[in-house]
Length: 302
Image (cartoon, rainbow, N blue to C red; front, side):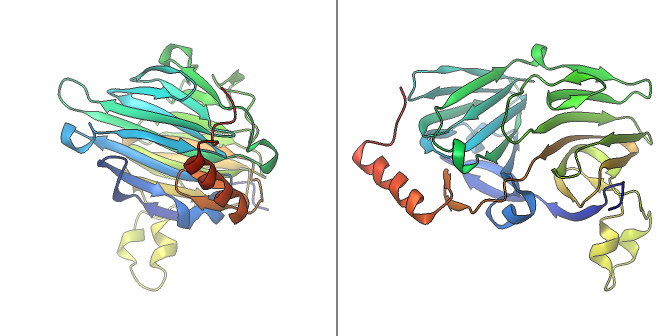
């Protein structure tokens, strides 16, 4: 196995509409799940028109997964069937473990100029924890450790560990890494992750080489090897980078610098039965969940 991870695939996020009409861009979802176990979905909601996000995500159920919301700009009001309510603001994170079942809503509000921007990541739960009691972890921006290297690289540690500092969220079964990383122009960044973890990055701003075998002329080589060479060029905003096997990441920012989220976790290797906001292991479990929604027995914990 190579010590340095290479880019296995890149995916451009695609526009879609969810909730009550929220316009967002989906970096990955149902069709990419075999490549990204234990992660299921990543949505980038980024807009300046309140009409495209203000109706939000009214009351809806979840079971069998964790939803992680990381907000950059604006705010999100939330409430749930357990009686929890609150507001996530710029720089905050909400890590919700749906477990056996929860019904909640999320209603975004933009800044005074209309800007709303955030990410939502779904992580799968293993079969043994799918029916655990639901829980929330609301993390404010001040609780997220920030490390700044001499090179100027800045790393916000939401989950995982970097330079001896642990993230604000721990005790999660998939042993996740979730970091917000900013690299100055033309600066190199290296970081090691467990070799058995699934690893991907999503570019927020700027561009970078995410593969050590970089090729500045990749996009000029649009022949049969286009998809190979495209992974070796500068990759810019709203692109997902899926890594192959290895341990160390070797990333170099472009001339405008780069900001991206880095995500990793231990694969579950379990079957997936996916029905919208509910993810179980078998079709029978999925059918039971939707029957319980209809007959009022979905919520198992109060």
